[in-house]
Amino acid sequence: MKKFVLLMMIICLISAMFVLGSCSLFAKQEAVAVDSETVYRNLADVYVYGEQALFFVFDQENNVPAHWQTNLTLLHQPANAEEKQPARSINVVCGDSVNQGLCLWQLASGSYTFQIGGIPLAAEGFTVLDGYTLPRDGLRKHWQFSEQDGLLLLTISEVDSLPDGYADIFIDVGHGGADTGAAAFGYVEAEENLRSSQYMQQLLEEKGLKVLLSRENMRIPGGDEAEDNPYISGARVDSLYRSGASYLLSNHLNGGGGSESGFQLYTSVMTDTAWADEIAKQWRALGWYHNNGNIGVVKDGVYKRWARDNIHTGRDYYFILRETGGMALTPSRYRVYHDEMAAPLRKGAEGILLEYLFLDNRHDMDYWDANYQELVEAVLNGCYDYWQLD
Image (cartoon, rainbow, N blue to C red; front, top):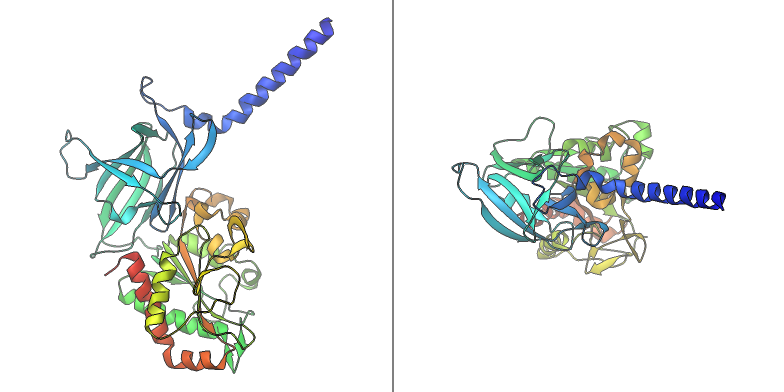
């Protein structure tokens, strides 16, 4: 009998240790150094996708892991306000897609703390996360999330330029090196993608934006290994993250056996279609038309392609979208090679993959020869409308 009692005591002790261990993931979030008489909402993390901030909180009341918070109250203290001036309360409703979060470029300069349902948002031990918006009206905004007195703090300030090494836009020049992409009628997709990307870069820079190309010629930066592995240091996915770019445009021409024609536009399965809709509208205004012949079409010429076709897994089929969107899109392959980027990966670029037309269709390529610059200009006009740039 004594052995049985001893055995039961050991089992209970092991069970208690297991329970405590399973809760340790949230212990850091619960140990908030603030007024013990006040109830606080515990932050899990903040991600930034493009120029949209996403807030994940631990639902302590229902004892469930972090979820995306769509209703926020911001308490704004202007940068030039007197010290004792009360903060202005701003109610914000975020959407269900990752490009429908808190729009950072719309926020006035100053500092912001947060409440959810009237409960302050606590963030003890939060690792600083910062970046820059696109320039609007001649000014950019530097945003920074940090912790102050145990609470999440967002600081917005206006700046004239980006620091060295940063970019606004990353242009992924499709294919290159040994990978030619589609080829027909004497055309090579990798060469045509470079031609359109360089013209796109020129126009964006004339707009006052800082632009980085994934390649400047037919070679792939990072050498032969980077041709097979776009995640390693110096390859295109790594270069995008280190540039801090807010937006990604991936330029391609399609291949469809010679019978397919028209454009296809792909954005992440986690976003809405607003960006693609703006570009499609501009292309149609030129008289160009859509193609609905691939998997994942959601409206004419606009696609969402899941990692497993026709099964909504919440992950993108195309790695250039999935792996460059930061933690909002769970870049699992890139993280395998870059554990040290765990903190920077909380920020990622919002991306779009453009299939302008079909290189192996004679009609399409005749149109490309005569109009490729107009097609690129239309893409950027759609981008400017989506980004709300003048």
